[in-house]
Length: 246
Length: 203
Ligand SMILES: [Fe+2]
Image (cartoon, rainbow over all chains, first blue to last red; front, side, top):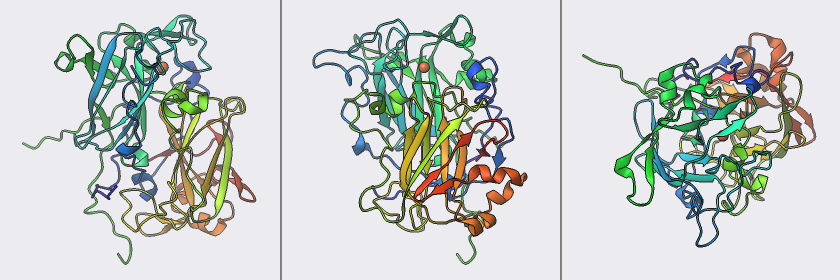
């Protein structure tokens, strides 16, 4: 790929009160997996502002289609067929092109295709639960899947995850790296979930709730959900300190 | 009137225990969707520089290694150039990706990267940074990915002058970022909490 003239400036500082706190005692696993000492803050260096690029040509034909990408020929995954789509943008609402969007999820019954998942709901022989896309020049992405089921998990005695899709985002710099989860509008499990509630601000939680998008629904086929994602913005480098002699 | 209208970043959520399904499906035997797990290979036969292996584990607050963590690393090539569109100082080694992704072993908790030793890269003010590798760690129970760096023990002089290491107020914590060397193999153990808690970054 040719080198686009991307803004390679430092990222806006992360708002660590907007993100979940590392220690969230109601999400029990976080108790022993949260740093207790203060993080070391420093401005981005070139090690943080740069990142790899993922070309569209690395993608397989069905990488964005979870309904078909693990299915036997002529068959398809069980469940409510949906399209999930939206824009990846930065904090200045500028599109993030060539972002790598990787997703994984449970099947319609809430079971993951993973050797460590022992939930009694059955596997769907036609569903792998994994997909990826890269955003186009407008930061747009879309994939097709089935709506994942809610599932119980060992935390409280009776905790259930809302239906959700895990998202991994790779923008243009390593310090922009983000993993998050997408929820579905109207799911009553959202406000009960200890993992959702690691986020304090209701407006932040709202950013993770996809909206039913009837305009992009494919009639007689699949409903659409819209999910926009915001990655960190970058400062202009125009007034940055220059290296000596440059 | 001018209004400041910025969007907020999408908030992070844990990668959960099943991160492999999306990020390293072949590693857990979900073959046939992607040809190869992304980031599995950083080097090939033509990569320039000293080939090294980086191993380690990620420990929780009881000293138990995490069995479900996923790590990503990002580093310069042997000449100190990044294989990135935003690298403007020159062309990095095309046979070295600079980016690696590895899950820890599901039984032992050990991770392993085959890479090259990075060259030095500049700090924004022009000073040299000691050779280092950026790490990003996610797992169940980690609500927002942990950033840190690994440095090289044989680079004593460069480490002493490194602008990032110099910012660590409690000098007893500096060694948490310096790997242990045995030939071309480096061990970098990461402690999320406890007496030897690794220095994590807000970058
Ligand atoms: Fe999940």
